[in-house]
Amino acid sequence: ATPTAVMVATGVGANHGVLVKGGDALERAQNVKYVIFDKTGTLTQGKATVTTAKVFSGMDLGDFLTLVASAEASSEHPLAKAILDYAFHFHFFGKLPSAEDSIKKRKEEILSQWLLEVADFSALPGKGIRCWITGKKILVGNRALMTENGVNIPEDAEGFLVGMEMNAKTGILVAYDGDFIGLIGITDPLKWEAAVVIQGLKKMSVHPVMVTGDNWRTAQAVAKEVGIDDVRAEVMPAGKADVIRALQKDGSVVAMVGDGVNDSPALAAADVGMAIGAGTDIAIEAADYVLVRNNLEDVITAIDLSRKTFSRIR
Ligand code: ADP
Ligand code: MG
Image (cartoon, rainbow, N blue to C red; front, side, top):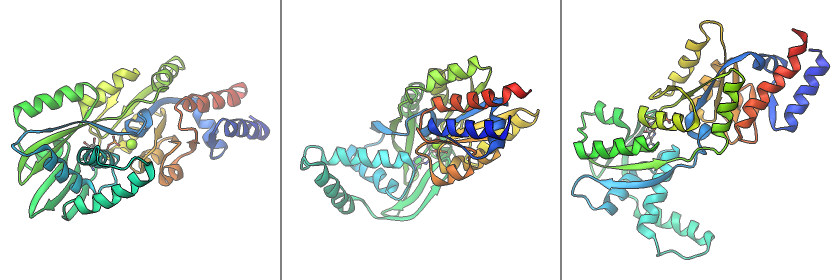
């Protein structure tokens, strides 16, 4: 392609909200063999919502939610925000003024009075959080976190958890003072275009893969819904780049689509890194493409644009 053709293609891309950083990136996209999708916030809307909270001990549900929300208050994870929202609505449903503004203000006011004091908070990437409340250790996170800390999950809770996971929900487990006390179910709806785009890629002979830190059962349920057959689950944040490097070994051109801070190393490792819309600054920095509309159809637009620009000269 001539420099003019590259310039024209870059402009066409920009008009569609597909920003390319340079002619090399534009050229590489035509040969993409694998597209790796992050699950949360990329295939899904990134709008996590709690749908279930269940206590598996004698504890009162309100007390359970207060405990978990207090622990999660220092976390920046989207799951933490969902849990805080749910706990707040549980406690204050029907007791709030009606105007949105004052709800927000009251919310902050009430939250600060109502949350318990937390000591020694730490975020455990890919697993959950740990802190101390009233001198006792609280763990909130996935199975790996519980197993690591020798927390036993009773059979009835395990059964309930598996049921949620098979329905594409993420189960968050809670242990207090060494004992499992309950769990929270979270759902994050798929983007409407996800399944269409996966089908489109397959038609273009591109192989879609999903990578996530979430558990296997939830990951597979989501993958099945969108039509992805190749799933890599329970991948620690640093492991996403390793998944890409493994696929590159035979010379395959690999694209990665992601949004989060956790995805930056993978976006950088990919031959074609695509940061999606509402992505974090660091993800946008690491990427070759920015898909500003936050719409997965633009993954296809980007590959198409490259193929059309460079096909004639081969
Ligand atoms: P993803 O790849 O889907 O963005 P992460 O690597 O951020 O996932 O997290 C993987 C898993 O770790 C989550 O599905 C959740 O079970 C657990 N986790 C991480 N952070 C938290 C948190 N603040 N509270 C509860 N669980 C968490
Ligand atoms: Mg993510």
